[in-house]
Image (tube, rainbow, N blue to C red; front, side, top):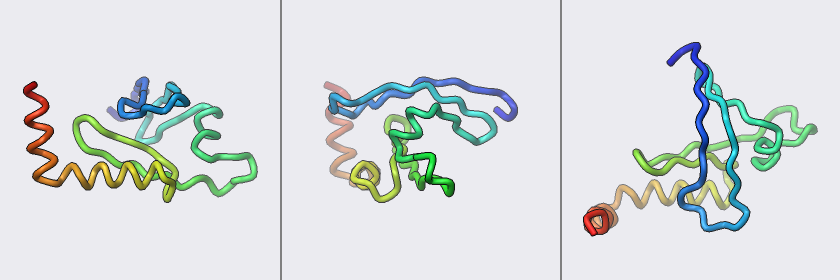
Length: 99
């Protein structure tokens, strides 16, 4: 929706971490705006004027993750998406969905 500001609350549905936190973000014209606390949690500092590389991984419609590129969280997110393509995983999830 161009030129329209969309606000959504994102929370980690797969995280079991006791440090999981929820942040408010704003999406406007293909740009996600975050507050300083979230930026710092993703690795930004005032000394990093060239930015922080992030990776968006996803498995529609349930799993989307943004993580620092190359971090353990990024590797886990990518492997989760890769495993979603495994026919055995798909069958197991389909079986569990009906329970």
